[in-house]
Amino acid sequence: MKICCLGAGYVGGPTMAMIAYKCPQVTVTVADINEERIAAWNSDTLPVFEPGLDEVVRSARGTNLFFTTDKIAAIKEADIVFVSVGTPTKTYGVDAGRAADLKYVELCARDIAEHSESSKIVVEKSTIPVRTAESLKTVLSANADDGISFQVLSNPEFLAEGTAIRDLENPDRVLIGGEETPEGQDAMETLANVYATWVDRDRILKTNLWSSELSKLVANAFLAQRISSINSISALCEATEANVDEVAYAIGKDSRIGPKFLKSSVGFGGSCFQKDLLNLVYLCQHFGLPEVAEYWRKVLEINDWQKRRFSTRIVNSLFNTVNGKRIALLGFAFKKDTNDTRESPAIYVGRDLLEEEANLAIYDPKVDPEQIQRDLGSEYDKQIEICDDPYAAVENAHAVAILTEWDQFKDLDYEKIYEKMMKPAFLFDGRSVTDSSELKEIGFRVYSIGR
Image (cartoon, rainbow, N blue to C red):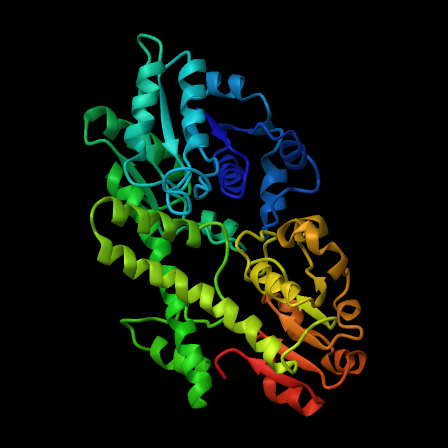
């Protein structure tokens, strides 16, 4: 069997690497028009940082795992084609800011139809709106040569950045959606057999196409909802002198609720939660369900409010002005163990402070400095210093803000940090990685969310 994946990003690259690693009998080719990205996948410095990914890629690359810019050859040779390209929220035209932009998915469908010399299984791996498969089938069938047919499947990813390799190796479930026809059932079984090489059959779920597509959006919506819920309670805890961590622990002991995704923070980020929630809001509005749309919109509004609340707290604590003051930001990735900054709370907090004319000293162990500059905007270049060491970032800083829960931030020498800072020294812990009582004993003025 030969598998091709169109798109070498955070989903396509790791997923295909794991399939190649677990299925040595399958040839896997990942194709992307981005030459720089493909070169990185073929190098010792991968474009995606994930614990364990290097080992998986190196074990299969050049044997049955290949990265190429030649998408035409990859499509022609493949039995199964995964579509794993970006589906960002539209920034133009009708439904801008709400609907998913499917132009890259459609372009892939046209490429597959144009260059296929045999019938194929086409697998939606990108996060897409419900009933996108119908559009894919329409484009494929309208442009395919006579005698060539396509079966479209939905196989959404449920990876968490930072644990993607573990999630791929031992998934909670593999979801495959297809048409309820003999051909659709055969296609689903073909893909199921690939995953069954290492995943137990009882964790491979088969549904219709529409249920599979919607399940991805709903899963992310429910996870985002839990984060916004505990973050809303964090504000109440501060007002009532309760401790949000203790509240979360107590309610998490209820078997009906459970402990996961109840960690209060400066807000959620990443490539999926906001985009998928916006998509879900749009779908609800489109199908005449304004009350449902408004319900899910509030989850996003709480997340935006939590980020603003954090940056406002910094300004207010520093005597209502950060003009000309040095603020050290520790962490810029949206979560630990990834170099992904998409929708990172650090971007929004950083911009709020820059607009207040603060000077930022930023340290993150994995994010490329150029990415940080791009995210914050070139107009602020003179106000930004990217540091390669956390102790350099805090030199003469008026305040420190922890915005990513990197493990190394738990073990920093905070007495040393205190000595390097301007006094009074403020520390704003947006991820609850420090011990507030110990920091106060050192001399810090501490703010930790929900306490």
